[in-house]
Amino acid sequence: MPISNGYPTSEMLLDTIFDYKTELDILNFYIGVDSLPTQINSPLRIDRGPSFRIDYNENGNIRFYDFGGTNQKGGLFDLLMDLYKLTFNECLEKVYNEMILGHELVKIKRNTSIKKDSVYKSEISKINVKVRSLRAYDLEFWGGGGITEEWLSFGDIHPISHMFITKNGKDMVIPCEKYAYAYIEFKDGIPTYKIYQPFSENYKWLNNHDRSVWDLWSKLPETGENIIITSSRKDALTIWANTGIPSTSGQAESVTFKGNVMDQIKSRFKNVFVLYDNDFDKPENYGRIYGKELANKHNLIQIEIPEFYESKDPFQFRTKHGEETFKNTFNFLINGK
Image 1: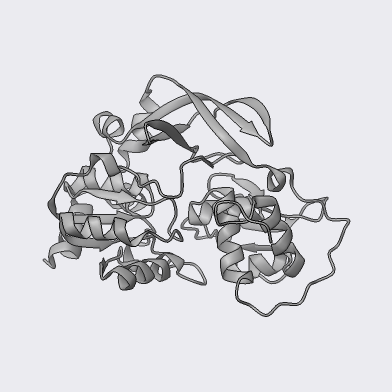
Image 2 (image 1 turned 30 degrees about the horizontal axis):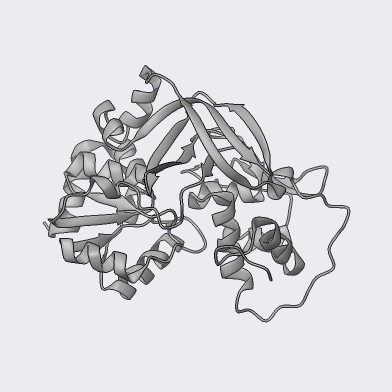
């Protein structure tokens, strides 16, 4: 299979995946659903439901509808991107690595009447943004995680009104949703962007960060006692703002970090902790699996949010349980007391 930068293109990955697996196969592997239509407890939030419906649309593609929470809806890969906080390309790589690569497979006969959702065919190569002023609802949203205006500025997180993207070679201007933010990093002096629209049905995550980019890397002190590697910039900033412990993150839990980078971190900090998502309510706890792999490979300390808090990540934990419980829990996780 032709590859670019070590990975097949998104179109090639998608074609290869669908040569061997149906959408229902993928849904069953990650969500545990093997027949449609169905209505289940939401895999994206705490749901006393069930209020999360999964069905086929008129084109034969899988669609989900969350009737009990945020009224989100979307396709199979929208669901997986939201579940694992990945971009579209990263999500394809995850499915390919976990369901296709290294497995003995037999090609299936595709149903040619089923059309690929247009987003599956799209590849975004360039992103730019128009920054807007910070508003009260922004501070309310981020404030749930204890992240203030000062911490947003420190973390290079900026509210935006428009995205300027190049998609399949075509330049587009897309008005952002009410809650829309750009995570900015610099690679060789050039800004790259990761767009986060937490309540979007279409563009929750867009990313043109290089896979080697570490969030908040330039903010880390030269040396220190402790550092925590997390799943996302939002989680890293939540920990740092509430506990004072420097934190950073890669571009996805499934990213393989270079040994020289990990050696540098270990040389600068006495204790290096890994805290990935605790996917306690999923068929497979991939946050725990990836965190364990990273910790074992580089001799790091793996920690996770206790399951009885029913919070998959630090931001959700801080939002649900408040500052005091958050601080006390992290003091126990780091110091054992």
